[in-house]
Amino acid sequence: MKKIGMLGVSMVGLAMAVSACGSNDSTNNAAPAASGSASASTGASAATAASGGDPVTIKVFQLKVEIADKFEAMVKEFETEHPDIKVVAETVGGGTGYMDALKAKFAAGEGPDIFNNGGAKEMQLWKEHLADLSDQPWVSHLLPGTGDGMKDTDGKLYGMPMNMEGYGYLYNKDLFAKAGITELPKTLTELQAAAQKLKDAGIAPFANGFAEWWIIGSHFTNVAFGQQEDPAGFIQQLNDGTATIPSNAVFKQFQNLMDTTIKYSNDNPLTTDYNTQVTLFASGKAAMLQQGNWVESMIGDIDANLNYGILPMPVGDEATSDRIVAGVPNNWAVNKNSEHVEAAKTFLDWMVSSAAGQKYMTEEFGFIPAFDNIPTDKLSQLSQDIVAYSKENKTIPMIWTSWPDGANKEFAAALQEYSAGKIKWDDVLNKMQDSWNNLK
Image (cartoon, rainbow, N blue to C red):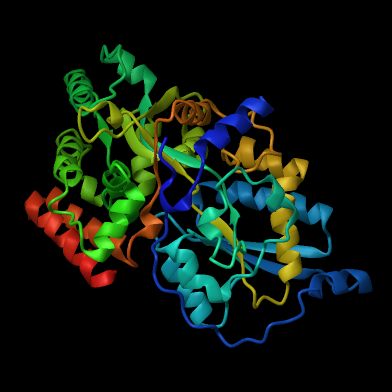
């Protein structure tokens, strides 16, 4: 099995942990300069608690819109157990650029105490703001490789994995049965045949959210990078000029998957946002959805009994096309200039070490944990499907955090133009290459 690109995530380790115990919105915008606020004592919260004063307040700025309400509920349980710490959570994501909003907060001297970081190149861009978490209790419970994206060359760890995620095409099992699809598609030709059967049965095959740059510019484009024989090596070759996107066989073949999703799309995909896309699928108005296990909470709010699973996003008919994307998509980071660093660390540790925090992670958020001390017997069927792919070594890496800063948005713009019929596929590949050259 290939490693999870430059993140180094071992899905085999995940599978072993699951067996033993019984899933961006982000872009790599450069981090702003430090706001200049003085670094306060990291023992502030402990001092406040000891003196019996008012609780300290830590601010969490996070991007998972689909868990926003349940995150607030978890915070209340934490505050009950830790009356000396108050947590104020703010969620920005979906159709709003999280990293742009985070950058603005730091530039205004209002950097949150806890925030998200995608790791790899994004970690390097924000390192001046990141507290060292190497000595935290949860570090010894990390699954192999899951912390690699937040480790620097100094060997220190600057973030805690939020979760493991996997994505591909979610599919409605009942609609597939209604269309007479008895064999799940594993290749592009089989996917096209299934889409045609769905269309013939009067069912919209795909719910496409092309209005969202991250859906098409990061997640969709990642498939072409992940299907390379050596994804990390290919990125290095692009950086040193020994390889190009227009001359790459996988990227040429990638057009066929794009064309298939366009041909069998819902109406107006270029104006369909994330929420609308998920709603179309969850309400049974489309049979397939390009998303991952992070949408389970949203789907459950619409139809808790929806019967669905996950399929690969095949670029061709090779056996290697039968793979989903999996890895650590994001991490929790602590602002090293926070006045309440220790309180922030306490909250992060509670999320993954307490019974309540662990329950929220697996049962409420639908997260696949990146830790060996969190029970996984209550994982959803979709998460179990993702684990099954990992056990069979059928995964490709989440590697967009290793792309040049801002490339994903420019990739999205090119693909959106192509979807609108304004440019040809050769133009898409040339635009991608130009973006890479200009931004690397």
